Image (tube, rainbow, N blue to C red; front, side, top):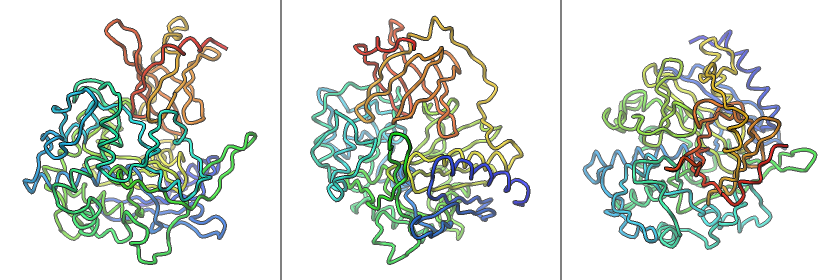
Length: 482
């Protein structure tokens, strides 16, 4: 596939986003049928020393790790050691929710984020050991009044904490989608108990090494002195401007590595995507998964509430109609990390983009590359052209504060005739898309905000960023038009 023509327009578009977003470094690669045809490194892995980025630079991939976790589960199912339809309590008898019956929650529900378990306040506790190494460190994800403040270092501690929380299920298992790092952490515990080795060791021996991912691991020290590793950067709000600073402390979540702890390179990750495109086979002919297992992983089981027309499979996100083709992808974000992986199983096209700061426009950069490849304007959205309107009289019903134990409060206000959503310190216009469904344009890509009603038709929750947030009726009156 030729790069002349589309590449220059893409690179101009990508550089615009990188400059505007103050992104220190981005690595991107595109492959067709496993053959790399485009690679680029924008910016630096180390700004101070002016060390550049390549497709062999090690970055974090954060939640893309969830797909590895599901590959491991499918391998264990192929080996007859479990079934995805087994109850979770068969392998984790300590899994309990206070005053709630969890017997109907299966491994499949964990893998598809449909267990009914709401967002939990465990993130701060899961990274507490890393925070102790740098007590001055700050991050938007840490500002949560409901956070558990006892360190969570083991699966047993995570299970114990979960059993004490006062929760209401979002719905019966299989009925409601809400992205759950905690449920994926517990999939790691299941892999550990069923395989008899640590989750990390299992993934290394059965996925990473057989695929030939030479610079991929859960631990920096396992890279044996490899030097092409990015620094991490964070954005600090200085009031009148935002400043990017180096923050070298890599966060670790010992009990939650199955939810997002792998470090890798673009080159290695393209080997990984190629395995899916080849129906479970590596370039060298080693079988990682059966074709049936791959098909199960990329089945669109449930709408994600992240983008209209998008579904969740097993650790993968599926858009059945992305300009007429099936797109499979997953993103990841964490301190010093934004990552995007995508592939088209029918055509063998795959792309990976990794960056060294959180909340960076990596998804916009990847979609820009896909657009330019097919001669569309780089900023195109497959959601463009959908028209829907909400009357000014109907807008106040959506106003209010929406709460989750994971991310805190998402305020929605009516300003100058438009609904505005605030998330992690930024405000976004909400564009009506369908009944009770809005689209938010953030970091150059679209995401959805869906309002959920109770039997009496009153709005009770907001589905946004893959999570469900409960409406705080006590504060709902705080949204008068300005």
